[in-house]
Image (tube, rainbow, N blue to C red; front, side, top):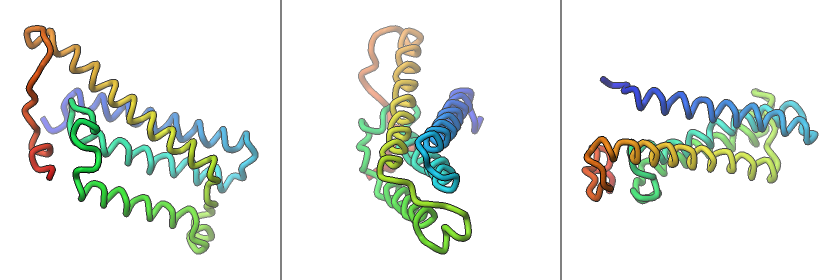
Length: 157
């Protein structure tokens, strides 16, 4: 099947993390005195940054993105760079601010946004580790020493 149980569970987990991070930072920004436009922009930016961190983790279902070489896929990094550039335009370009009622996040808000993205990467990494450890006894115990690369991993330069 195209969508296995593991993939569906991971999608649900990432969705919940994005939702919690977005709502949480929206509420925190409002509590810290940010206007509605800035708080909404922060919430939208959490989704973009969180998805970028998750995208790095999508290259393998079982291995961490650091073990694959976090920046080894130039197309992936290029796509993330373009997406972040468009998000910056969404947040800071005056015509976009007028069109979408956005306001650029403060430097402190950016640190919080990046922290949510990093948390998503850490949670997904931990989830992969737990799945590997749970699967190890089913494969006859012992630690797995060899990993057969997936087609995506084989194509990575």
